[in-house]
Each structure stands twice: as structure tokens, then as C-alpha cells.
Length: 129
Length: 131
View 1 (cartoon, each protein chain N blue to C red):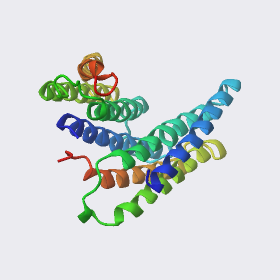
View 2 (cartoon, helix red, strand yellow):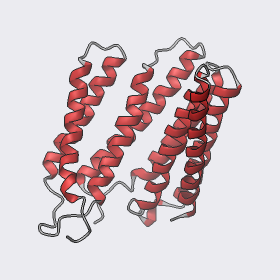
View 3 (cartoon, each protein chain N blue to C red):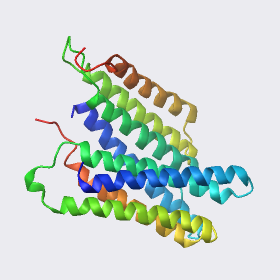
View 4 (tube, rainbow over the protein chains, first blue to last red):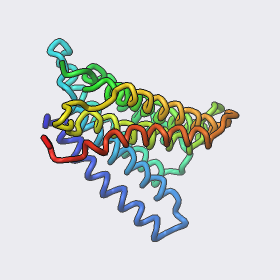
């Protein structure tokens, strides 16, 4: 596995633990809806989406040599943006009042990660011949 | 990658971007911006069904072992129809949740038909490699 994929998969496992912990806590305090919302986002983006990013960057057909070195650095960018976005999203949900602009900013960072991932993987979604 | 896999994975990436864009719009509207935002259920359905489910089915269509007897992954045309039904159904379903006057149940049924069409072609390939 290339190093960015290993980082993405390891961080996905961390978010799995964080998300499950948040959902268990929300079950213990049913009035705390914010814990459940943050937990669902930690699992959906931090765990599942990040795991898909990591495995796809490792498993999909290799980029053609002419694709350039930016793809290697771009994979580190996907990891940085995804985790910054999820951390900001859960932090804004828990520490700040939900409905603040921080949640929208966190969404924008996660959207940036998704767009960068699409740009990286686009040329690798092809036939093996 | 097979043609059906490529189509499914590209469509899944489209749903990923759409769902995340929807999330930004929802959060912006909740923060007070006077903009249109999709229904939160549509945001969740787009991410869960459009991205995760379709991406998994697309990669499975590519990676699962081929039956040794034929060496073929099956009828590609039928798979493309199933992927079309999956995406059309999900588009109708999410649009209905966002207030467009479309039948949500028909969209959900079409989506389910597409998933079943793809999955039934995969079941015979869940076997030990080379058998």
C-alpha cells in the first residue's frame, strides 16, 4: 500500500472508534442530539468515506506515467482535508452551537477533499488494457 | 476495470460530490444564509446509497472472481441497465424528498430494482478463486 493509503486507512479506524464512542454516549444521554449528529458524521465521512478513499487510491489501476507527481502529493492533501473537515464538523457540533457558520466551513473543507479525490482518481477509473 | 464498473464508480463519485455540496448548503441555510437547501434526508440518501452502495457494487463487479467455465463477468448490457435504474430511481427519490412533485415510492422501487439487478449478477461470482 502507498503511504497515503496507509495513513487514510489508519485514520479511518480512529474515526470508527470516535464515532462509535459518540453514538454510545448519545444512547446514554438521549437528550444530547448533538452527540448523535456528530457521531453519524464521524462514521459516514471519517470512517466509511475515508476508508473508501484510502482503498481506492491503493487498488485502482495505476495512473499513467504522464499523469505527474502532483497525484502523490494530492493524496496527502485528501487525507489532510478529510480529517480537518471531520474534526471541524464534530468539534463545531459539540463545542460550538450547532447552526453556526463553522459547520458550513467544515462542510466546505470536506467537499474540497471529495473534489480533490475525484480529480486524483478520475484518470484511474479505466480499463486495464 | 469493466465498463459497468467504470460507469458505476463514476456515478458514485458524482453522488459523493452532490451529497457533500448538499451538506454545505444545509449547513449554510442553518447558519442563516438565505439560500435553497436540500432536505437532510436527501443529503443522507445521496451519500449512503448513491456513493457507498453504488461504489461498493461497482468495485465488486470489477473484482469478484470470474467463473472459470466461461471466463466472463456476465452480460455487461444488463448491468448498465441496472446501473441506470439505480441512479434514475435515486434521483427521483431524492428530488421528491426535496419537494419536487415526483413519486418517491416509485423512485425507491426503481432504485431497489437496480440494486437487485446488479446484486443477482454478482452472487454466482462469490466463490473460491478459479472454481
